[in-house]
Length: 369
Ligand SMILES: *Cc1c(COP(=O)(O)O)cnc(C)c1O
Image (cartoon, rainbow, N blue to C red; front, side):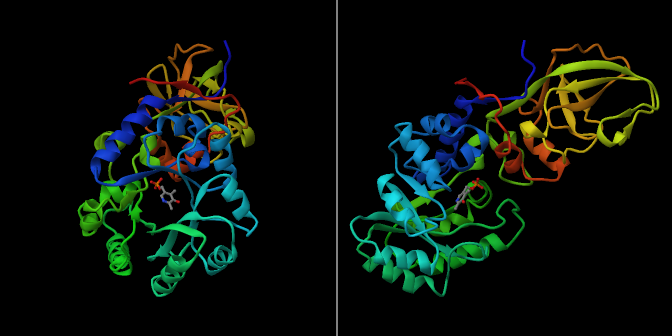
């Protein structure tokens, strides 16, 4: 038996999440976001399951190349757009749709001859990351409408804090996006996963666009069964977690009260107890910031991480009466141990945990309907 950290990906869960998300706004078209190796779930296998999406979206040209090499010919949007003008040639070869968020990208498109792209103009409605300001947007829209390299022009914006339903910023962003797109007759998109689940009522201001089939949704994290909202679990939203990240016990040993454990000897046991050594560490994506106390599921019960995480190993306190044996399964997150819970304890985003899995061994893909 191998003892190694591995992600188990339930493709059926991704399929069900996609259907559920589509049902939230059946009139909208869906841009399924599969950047970052489909948030750690495996780019190609996830994309195959999402073949009904109207488009896929990624962050890098190299990700589109992988999709095309795998024979996936759906539309793919390059979020963020090109980084150099030379990327445009590559984007043509890969049949990419582009985001345009800056003056320089716009100029490259205006100077580009020979081919046309579907273009998403990105408007910054308050996140202050990428995009033309609402003041600059009308001019950018006019120039892109006149640009010979643009086949179809669409407009998007991105929420900064929609995971917090109490933050009025999201409502501000929706207002600004509505204002800037009032006289635009093309397709629109603003809702990521959190927007969809948390602000469905507010998004009704795009009712007319939705009725006309001009509204797109852009779910990412929710496709993978992770809650996009800080105040709701995936189960409460009806989402199915797709990833279980698990390994096995590589060692079980008796400790005496006062023994110190691991690098730095930072954890010291108060009592005689059994220590479990799990074959998973930061080299697998189970990172150093998992504090003592983080739960790991061993034989159906939660036991705490103790001491520092090593590259390949993690130590857990199995308790004085433990009967666990070498080879027993240890779930780091997933089935019966929500990744959101681990993320909260580690003080980082669940996005980072799932995307950060280092697949030293290829995931095990299953497809439970
Ligand atoms: C990543 C990304 C999304 C998806 O966001 P989630 O929070 O994962 O749903 C949508 N739109 C853009 C522009 C993105 O970069």
